[in-house]
Amino acid sequence: LVLLYLYAYWYGVRLIARVQGAWLQSLLFLMVHLFALSAIINMGVVLGMLPTKGLTLPFMSYGGSSLIATSILFGILIRAELELDQKITC
Image 1 (tube, rainbow, N blue to C red):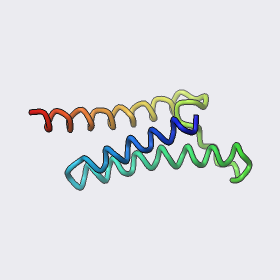
Image 2: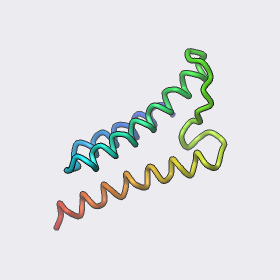
Image 3: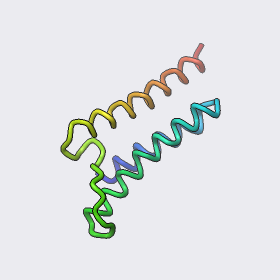
Image 4: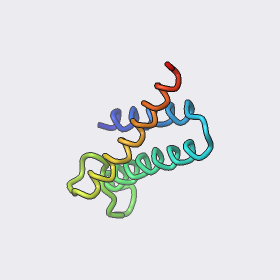
């Protein structure tokens, strides 16, 4: 599971490096790191290394609003990559 989260983070960082435009890069940077930070904090709480904060583990923890927000976040990332791929191939 940790490897899947690392892959998702790597996917986002790779996408940030490919995108042109400061505004879009900033938006994607914040979204990717929000995802990674919430996963790191949740894993730290589960391992007993951090105090409890109430953050959910993205895509895994029970809660509808967290799942919807994370799905929207990755939908925006995938859409940004599709737009980038269309600009390159055209």
